[in-house]
Length: 161
Image (cartoon, rainbow, N blue to C red; front, side, top):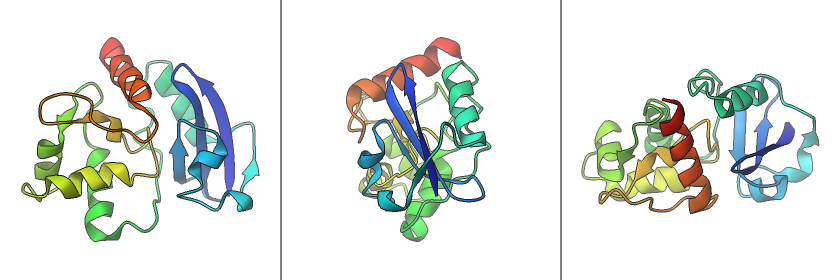
């Protein structure tokens, strides 16, 4: 497994990929911040991690769809979480949804808490854009990498739409 950390306007973005380039984890942190998702002792650092790095840079440069085609392989999600993460990838940039709407999109409208858990347990920030989910009242809610990062991502998507 390889990782790279890139400076972004929202803070450092670390991306971990497996041998075929699928994103295993990513977050707005240094590599140690991804320890809940991957064994960081097994990672090898690179300047970039191929297509995932290129896609992230393109996204930051304004191509909001660049991250869409990057394969993601999260572990330990179970059936609903894995499905919910796939659904998150279909939420359009610049068009955030509420947790209630996300639960409905995932096929379990009453399961708002389960939808929130899918966001909270998402290991592949940016590539699985849980930042696009808001509280029912439209406020930001939570984000593992901090509300300033979530706000920056949402503002970025609005500004280049």
